[in-house]
Length: 113
Image (cartoon, rainbow, N blue to C red):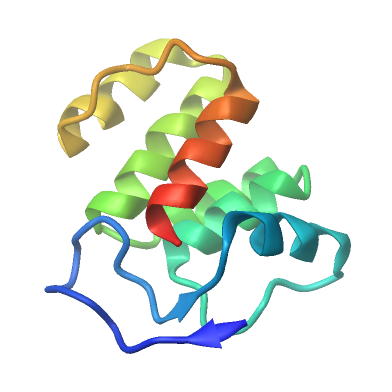
């Protein structure tokens, strides 16, 4: 994993210390623990990718950044709570997503990496 300095003011999309390519991030899902240095939003996506919605939701809820709120919206879509998902999409200024969950996961991950 490549290291990069934090970019931009806190709370902006893509605000994370560790950077890697999407494919590399997806490959880490075979590991027991996530890579070090991920933002709470990327940790939430990682745990969702592992099938642990509760842990993913905890990380998304623990951070007030735009990135975490976007992931929070996605997670409520995964849960099937579209009303709650809509609330979080509106908070982050994103339209509700209509693509597949897998496509949205990849879109968010790629944007945040």
